[in-house]
Length: 125
Image 1: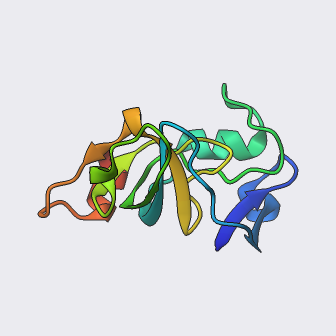
Image 2: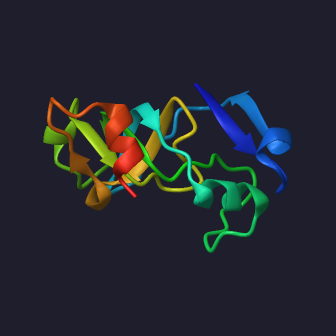
Image 3: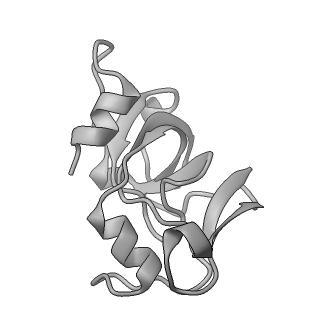
């Protein structure tokens, strides 16, 4: 899958690299979503710069708001989440600026059919 990755802290227009990386595998109590939309906010700029309160190890994929469809569930996650459209906060280092992202199952919110991925991601945080 493709993801925007940070290998060194700096400015997004200079220090984000589009790469092919393995699809993230959910750990227990996590799911993997196929990202339908990701929102960008100040927190993402600060993550790339290395000045946010969360400091994932390099390299990482930023993006703290995402909506999409659950494509894999980890151990201890109800299989009923499979195929569900959700919004939530991805678990770094596998953020939302990728084709797939990992989220804690406890941070998932189901989306009604009349709410688009774009609207959900843009209004979550």
